[in-house]
Amino acid sequence: MTDKTLRILIADELDEQVVQIERTLNHLGYFRVVPVASLDELMTMVQSAFEPFDLLIANTDMAVRSGVDLPRFCKASPQVRHALLYEAQKADLPEPADPSQINAGVSVAQLPDSEVLKKFMAIVESPQAPMENKVRVIGEQTPGRKGRGQVAGLRPL
Image (cartoon, rainbow, N blue to C red; front, side):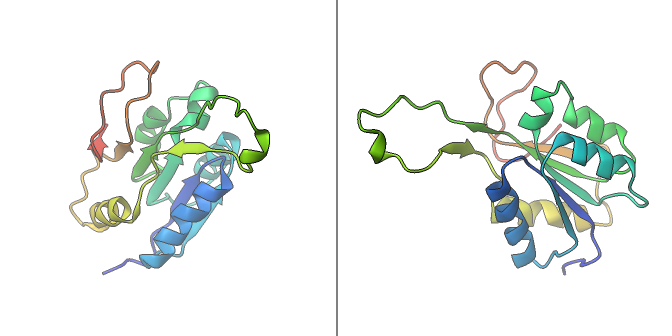
């Protein structure tokens, strides 16, 4: 059964990704969702929260560019009970021979889909939810990032 009182924070610089995640959560029955579009907004919301967020869903790329270790921040913060982190990057595409053939930007992302969110929400809602593995990362290993192993679906950090 969906706990409609859960407080969820979504952090991503790309509006379309935030909307996609929020719609999926709404479809699953979660409506107490706060979207933020920058690392500064994320930090402000977490640090000034009167009560902890039950779940943070965030794109780690914006934190990496700022030199912030988001998994470590989430583990250390009492204001984040659980975190689901993912990586998303803009794709570098070669210039087309005919520029009129491209009419939109392209991004490649490992967003949490409906199935991943449903499984993770079951963990968050469980009375036995393990706090020692409260941060999980989804997506593929990104070249050039040290300390990240291959992620198959969903794994604790």
